[in-house]
Image (tube, rainbow, N blue to C red):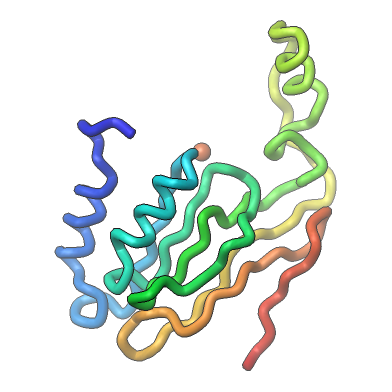
Length: 150
Ligand SMILES: [Fe+2]
């Protein structure tokens, strides 16, 4: 993580500008990053001050949906919406060729098979903190996870 572009300082600035339960009814933080450790750390950094911290970028949904101790819903990565019969959403041939030969021979093409919709479902209380989080996975290749009304 580049100290000159510190996402924790940016999160602190925005959380302070619109406090949850005072100015904002809900605060959603999308941590677009590679490292799971950085995303989990951001979850704890925002815990009690955001309704949800959810990661993106990895293209694969993680199995760690939870509510952190101070009431922030968290999942390390929501996963992509797209065709999982692919290499992170791209047709397999070109990425596989590049990994095995280090030779580029074409453009990445978007995989066009049946898509899976991925995301998270969160309910909040009057204070804006989470009371429930469940992963959403619908359609395509992945095992379904569809939140039901309580
Ligand atoms: Fe990305």
